[in-house]
Length: 95
Image (cartoon, rainbow, N blue to C red; front, side):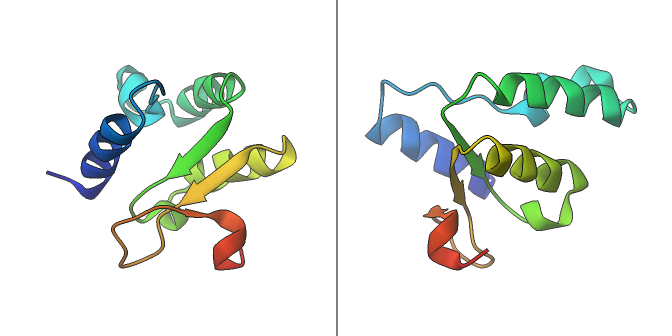
């Protein structure tokens, strides 16, 4: 099982009242229309209180743009640092 799936399952187990939304899975049907998918991702993100970034998110243009959106909108942001199997607040890792 991928690390991001393990983290989501752990989050749901620890916090059963939260709703996890995964844009990469929700908008897979866009296939090659990356800008269209990103537009929908940002619309989904606008409805959220927090943004969570897993895996090698820093290598994804879409994730970096979602992160910039979350920062501009003063959202709580948690990231998975490289080589770690946990989430940390963005401010804790100095980005």
